[in-house]
Amino acid sequence: MYQHKIQYYETDKMGITHHSNYVRFMEEARSYALEQAGYGYDKMEENKIFIPTISVSLDYKKTTTYGDILDIETKVTNLTPARVEIEYVMKRGDEIVCTAKSSHCFLNENSRPVAVKKTNPDIYKVFESMLETKGEL
Amino acid sequence: MYQHKIQYYETDKMGITHHSNYVRFMEEARSYALEQAGYGYDKMEENKIFIPTISVSLDYKKTTTYGDILDIETKVTNLTPARVEIEYVMKRGDEIVCTAKSSHCFLNENSRPVAVKKTNPDIYKVFESMLETKGEL
Amino acid sequence: MYQHKIQYYETDKMGITHHSNYVRFMEEARSYALEQAGYGYDKMEENKIFIPTISVSLDYKKTTTYGDILDIETKVTNLTPARVEIEYVMKRGDEIVCTAKSSHCFLNENSRPVAVKKTNPDIYKVFESMLETKGEL
Amino acid sequence: MYQHKIQYYETDKMGITHHSNYVRFMEEARSYALEQAGYGYDKMEENKIFIPTISVSLDYKKTTTYGDILDIETKVTNLTPARVEIEYVMKRGDEIVCTAKSSHCFLNENSRPVAVKKTNPDIYKVFESMLETKGEL
Image (tube, rainbow over the protein chains, first blue to last red):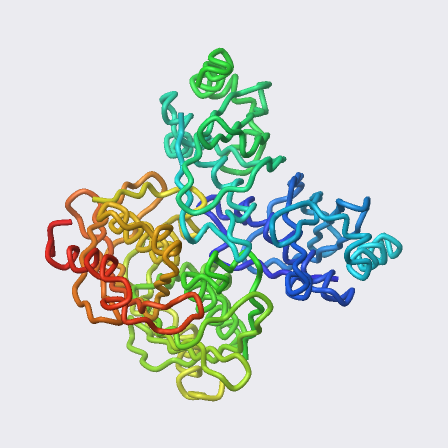
């Protein structure tokens, strides 16, 4: 499980964590989950596979602030040869503070869509394994 | 119409504008639209009304990068006594690069929901005017 | 010793960690050191003491990038009743990647300078202890 | 003269512009000044010249906050075949809120130092012109 501690620079003048930062926490958690699954972003990019974000949505349930520790669960909820969808639950202790989704496509170094299942089956398998461990990451 | 020019620090190692920044562009455009409508965030907060973001969703259509100029249209698509929904269209020239939505509630200085239509009718009217000028902002 | 792992959103289109982020890493490390010393920023602010930054300087020795882990040492190098100076050394493994300094004053809730040694001797002692443990934090 | 309007997301829980953001304002102003001088960062990078930041120092004179407009003056204060130093004065109206310096080296696409005066005299001339117009940019 990925943890993020809210930094002072992540707060705003309302005294709370600025909502834009949660999109960054999603990326941190996604990056960590991939690394745990044995295939970090850096390794993907070495293999000329890029996974840009094509959509995000976030529901802010509770405000958080400086010093709060967020536990972030990540799971792959949908996987096609060319696309992956990921869900996130962010908690402070037992309390859900934010739920979110992101979707991503697979591109090669020329920014062309790649059917990664064929071209890089090892990468596809990483996401597949995150799908299988649904809810347990 | 609000304009944002992409800064170097807004790009990432993929060479494109990092997707988290668009949530900030939404805030810039929203802030600008409210100010144009005669009631900026600072004036609201002086009147002890706070408008935290309770959800956002973004669809990234095209990547952008350093030096690109985004034109951002903002319109209020739904307004209730306690809540407001806003839509955004971000273009580079004629090309739509991102569409997005956000929703916000009205809180007082004690973080309690406020039926702003009653307590601060002038603020409600600002959002109402943004609703009426739908598509023209 | 504080550790920061470089995130994807902290990189720029040159492929390296954007230099502005190191000012944030300094804050992270400072915040952590104070917390370790028993008096985090949140506790200070509860006691109505604020420690704004009045200057920073940074020397970038080596570039870093996504996935790099920075070890950040923090020490108080000068302490007066109204002001504190802090130095930072950031390393990737044995390699120094950035050295930096910051100075801070003590303000009360009305943004007035406070001789914290008198008004809040417990806070002063925290910084003093960081001075004594020079080089070992 | 470059102008930056402080955004909500640039503030922190102290209610002021977070000090790390001024390093970004420096980049914005530098980028703008180069563009005005006819040679933006994008054009430099097309010519395989990169200008990473090797040091920055900032003195925060006054706090600023959401909605404040900063006027930022930029001037080249030192130029050698391999390096450039730039100074910044940031004002809110007549009031100086921050002064700063940065230094930069010239690198080629392989991250090797370049004597840009020889390899890209047109780029060198741009910085030279910013030196000549000292104080007037």
